[in-house]
Image (cartoon, rainbow, N blue to C red; front, side, top):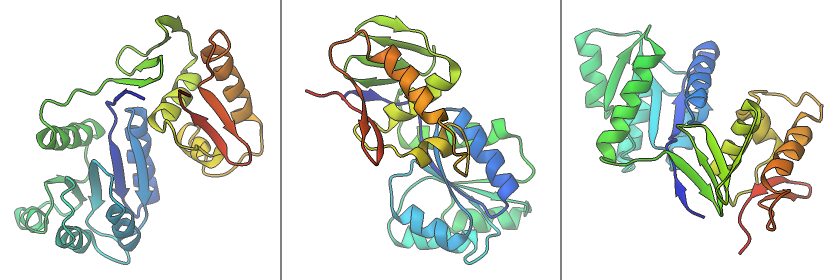
Length: 232
């Protein structure tokens, strides 16, 4: 598998569910993979699991406040870029946040466009010159900028939901993706609507990316979910 990814793996630590949903939805629509933790302790556990390109941490959190969470991460040697969100916007508040180990500080209320620009800037500073715009699995290619999908050079026309489904599967290539993962990240359901919506879209997607080609890429893992992978 060859991958050039424009997406970031982001952890949002925010106890206000409405505010968290706003950020998570916007980031996912911007082609990023996003996890959410509702309190400081859960945020710390998830962050220590590693693998995040950037953390977005609210300062006022239950269980463990944001500054304590950040300080603990830094003590563990975690160097992930961290953007602090807070309604506390005085100079002293911002200074405390940066001294605790935050890399940037954004005061509520804020524009989502500014939030996105700030986290992209944090990641650019950490990975200068990194260009990530294309996902590739075998001979299947998805361009996140042009929204173009091809296989063996043949263009494949996908509906918006099919594109999002394929994008998610490609970002998790060689992994088993469960129904719950698809419902939460492609359909943004936090419950199982007990419909065959996933089966229908998987069937349509498989017909478009596999039917005319010799080697199937989209595999059903019985009792578990689906996996997009090139079989050598």
